[in-house]
Image (cartoon, rainbow, N blue to C red; front, side, top):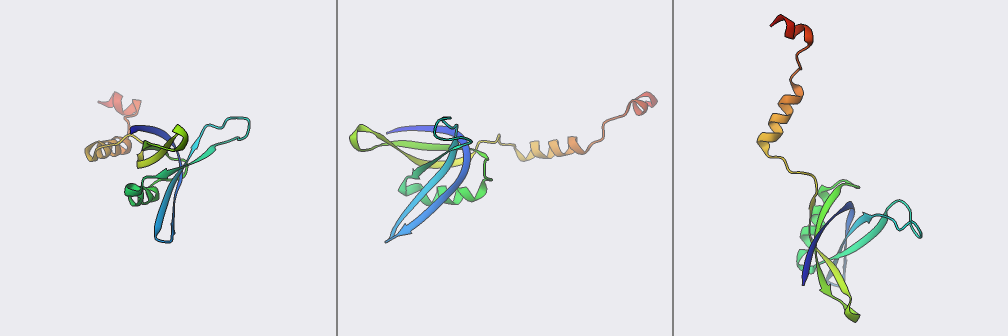
Length: 121
């Protein structure tokens, strides 16, 4: 099976349980086609059964419209069509290390020297 990753706008995750079966979907926004939709094109992707709990729980950590990275697999569907199944979802924001975050905070709180202060030195 082919595996791919895409970056999209996060809309939500949804879990439905019926008769002992669990169905999880992740919803994301894509560019509208301009003919039948405007704003965001809302797309739902099924989640692979063995990743359902992980993907559903991850959805609680994202803000609506946050850029996310979805890893998915293309499973064989009927009539020679592929069926996308989400495997993992994570933020598309660049990761910062704890040391980098602390240095950024310190540089933001430090006052820049004014020209008058620099002339006194």
